[in-house]
Length: 310
Image 1 (cartoon, rainbow, N blue to C red):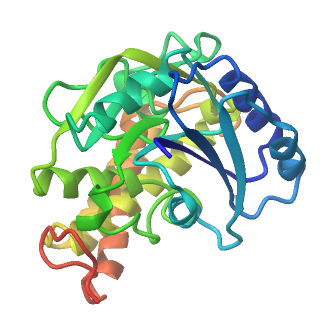
Image 2: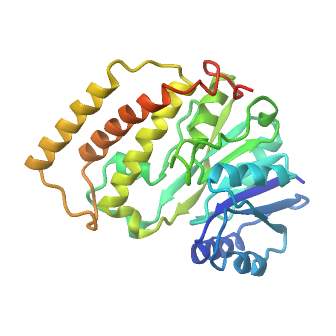
Image 3: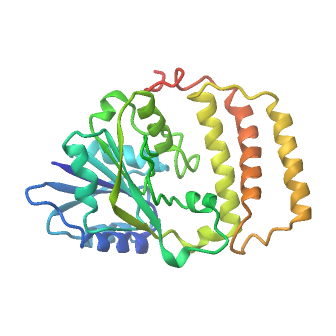
């Protein structure tokens, strides 16, 4: 098998159906053997029926079940079943370009790099005039991957299977369903630590169609808290960094947040939009609070290690 496409999903059958339908227009180079693995993370809706009804003339579509909650666990279960040399990852709410498979997999199969980072464009109907670069980034948009070790984002990335001979599978304490974020971030940092080349791929893209509820203030604030907690995990367990006076730091950012909310009252939780300052302050508060708890745990990694402690 040349290429395995991995899509994780949980109770989002309509979005998954649209994504699988969009893959029907993606071409597979002549002679390539390609499979798609839909990793079902405990869905209770029509996900199984959607996967069963999906088809592609050149792609074998497989359904893998992982009942334990967490995207990282679903990805690891899918990788255990995958047979491809190139592992392409995307989400259940995207529309890939026609050349996405070839453009993403060919550099990996030709061994020009160990990973690829593709372009991710937010759907036009979800763009808002109040967006800052932070808002776009938090919705996984990557319009122009950096030239030097571009960051890996799960909506469009590829990894050569040999990478996992040196680096552990995705950390199952990170990612949606657990911490909220960070599983591909840790892998990216480990690859940079190991000197593994990551190639930006700019001649293809996926269009990202997140749920409109992601634009509500409540969602931005929940995401900020998750990002803060994820950063605390990475800071303690992998970076081995210290955080002086985390309790005082949390109090200081809470005070700043409360005062600024009095002066610049944000909208209600069910309204669209959230000021970047509110997102940043809340992330710092949650980072400080979670760091206090994580710092009491034994570290899961040696300093910047490629594998977890046994």
